Image (cartoon, rainbow, N blue to C red; front, side, top):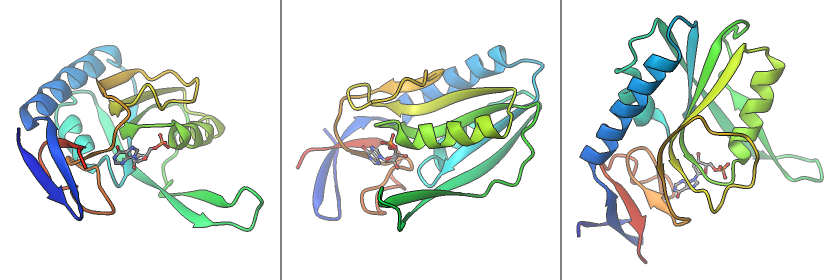
Length: 178
Ligand code: IMP
């Protein structure tokens, strides 16, 4: 089993590059079929989704656009503490089918924040596509339309996903062992 060290932690290979790419091709094929004839705007959620978004979008044959948004955390003054601000919204999404591209859906808080914003801005339809999904950690009701892999509730790195900022450039996805 291939192992890598990222900072102080040891990880073992969990999904190979070939497995990831194979699944992305299948997702792209399904999206191309489902959204045929629609005005589609893909939204990659930075930073983690940049590789997934690039590899998927290359295989989209629809007349489509892509843009990226980022959720930045900062300590707010409200009682809830952390506030997440969305950066990078420039597009008019009225009348468009929006496909949100996530690297991983864990608790679903990020997703909920984004969906709220899209609803306010009057997208015609919103679809969610995530490479990885942790069903045991998910606390929301929002249905996820396209899932690459359902994974157990453990920490993963690689293919865009980071551990403390590192490990994003690994071609496979690795699971924490210690
Ligand atoms: P959520 O808001 O709890 O669904 O978390 C989503 C975000 O948490 C992702 O976009 C990742 O940035 C981060 N995240 C969640 N699980 C992992 C993991 O296993 N490895 C790396 N990042 C993760």
